[in-house]
View 1 (cartoon, one colour):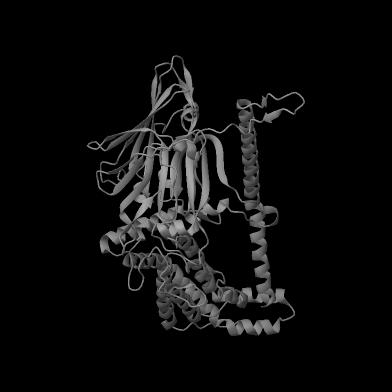
View 2 (cartoon, one colour):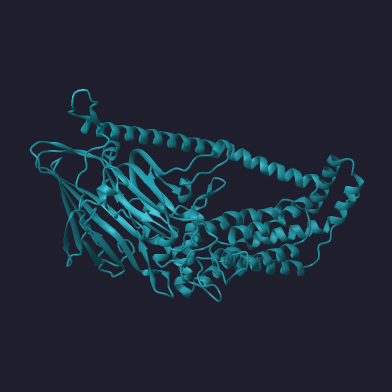
Length: 615
């Protein structure tokens, strides 16, 4: 590697370190501070609970004979009490009117303990369907003062079912506070994009006491999200919430211990953020989500929004044991690490309630596929749960949404997502054809200048500045721009990132394949490599071969150091695509093949003749 190549590598590494220092370090420090505040809050809460226990069970001194030491029983060891007999929950299964979801309700916690998506499958060949909150112990719609409190969730509610109207209600009275709470779930009644997976939830509070009272702030639980299959991409599983005009996301790996040196942190058991104006919270995996949204406050003055929108969010990650995973009918991936579920909840503000008064709060539960065409029809920014990210600070969401809508439109015409991706790639390459053609011609001219460039290098070996000046004259006279060959690649990077982010979350691709590819949303594994345990995925390998062929056919011109650096590109793309959705490798393979055709057309055009300068 020559000095220029080394300099390029050093500048690139330096830029990455500077970016990490300037951008990620403040975020890591903010994370660390939030974690310290959370630990302090939990320690204070634990100390208060211990103090309350001591106050409720003060030390008791047992009378003794004179001359003996009194026996003392501390408040931390109360006398034994009879074991509490826990009742079994009442369970009721109801199917939505469109017939696409089957909900299992439980009287313990008064919510949805499971939701079966009848038109979405874990394994289509076996007919096993996707289950929402599959490994969850907290029902969707459960309400507790402290998030994740399973003891409170296990308290029974009185269940009432109206099977004709597809409405189910839960009622419970808090005798200590003299408040009655009724939760009413309205199941989907229409098979429309906006309502098919949306459940209405009304919570009515009634003061049954003799004086005004404060309804406490509660947490409304969204259940949990776990991978549908062991091969899912972990980066998309986690907890989302909407606040301050944008979606926020903590993926499942946030809870793990990690980082290096000053950026290291211990394992974080829970995530919690307090504040105001939280509009919704959601637990998500790669393709499905369960979100709870506060309704009725789309607009208004800031005071009303602060009083009525969410007061905080909470999430917790729990490992799913191998036995639990297998018992649910799933297959383990020996290469992947441990699997987890992520629970989440949205804080709902407290309020004053006069004697005999009733107040009803309105919510929506969306439990279904993360399809943009559905989520964009909901009116509280729920579509932002499909966050398509950015590249070097440039949002790639517009690219991703345009590509997704185009792909779905082409699928509607062809009936094949593989063909839709091929046609979409052809359309993108057609738009870039003139620019790529200009770049190819420029590279062809650069290639023709190689003898002149070599002559000048030998002549000005000891004068690099003079060499650059003379080469500048040569390029100018030949009408060549040495950087123009980079523009097509630079323009395609946001498009590639847009495809990457879109295809990684495109639930539409699940169980759609072609030839040997069974599922475009998964790697195209055809076998497992012996002794290594890694899947053999042909499409990313074919993609790398087409990249090498494209490089081989490209006119050899420009900086040799840049050409050496470009030789690493196939390895980078294999790393990005190998265990990703095979649809991405299909897109890049097709675009490489089209580029090869374009290079061949350029190659057959008249030869470029350049008159060298007489330097």
